Image 1 (cartoon, rainbow, N blue to C red):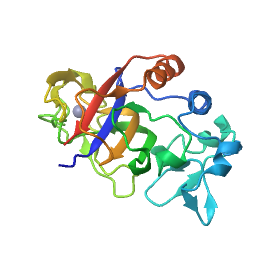
Image 2 (spheres, rainbow, N blue to C red):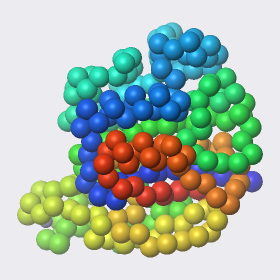
Image 3 (cartoon, helix red, strand yellow):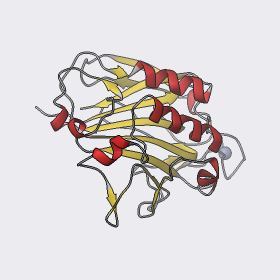
Image 4 (cartoon, rainbow, N blue to C red):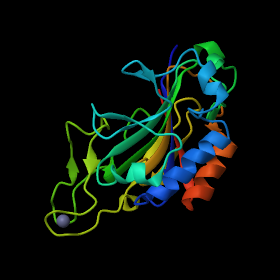
Amino acid sequence: MSVTYQHYFIPETAAFHPTSDKLTTFIQGLVDLRFIVDERSFDFGRLISKPTLGGKTIPGYVLSDRRTVTPIPSPASATFFEQFLHSDMIIRWQIIDLSQTPVRHPVELFDIEPAQTWYNIQLELSHDYIYRTGDGIESFPSTRCGCGAELEFYERNTPFYTSKIRSVCPECGLQFDPSTITVELCNGFTGNCSRVPGGATSKFALVVDCDKCVPLCEVSRLHPDLAELCVNTFGCKFRDVINAG
Ligand SMILES: [Zn+2]
């Protein structure tokens, strides 16, 4: 049996959107805690499997739409991220072979085969709400504003392969607040379900996408060092949402 696994770390305040300075601080934290490898380090030169762009190895990149890949400079700077501030953004690092990459897995899972393990660790940002649903994440009963206007929309060129929900109603100007809607979240591993305001819908999230590279396990959680880095850097509380099935 194979399952796919995405681990979302979602701000409890769904409207939270980090500044460029915070992004830069967070990325340096990822390097310091060895969740990613800095391009300038000795370890980066040792990697055998690594993402490439135009024949050049890249440590991480920004997707501002489905086609535009911009490598993150090393060291990352707030000025670099400023250029993307008004667009949707995925900031992604791909770990292709954990046995060849001297980093720590961002999710605590047991019985991992490092040579068989790959994943993406990424930050997702939008000025509208990224509407995440899936095997373990129930859809909202309605995505309409109180005035009746439909707030859900889909853009073909956004880097997210999901729809979004407008943060402000174009008809009446009311702000949409996902936390007023409670949905059921179910962990496909444990079968545990709970009802959570806002579900997995937010303007910002840390996402670990393990695809099918996960052992079946009863318990999984974001690595405590990574969770602490998120809380301390971004200054808000987060919740774990697991989409597995
Ligand atoms: Zn409205």
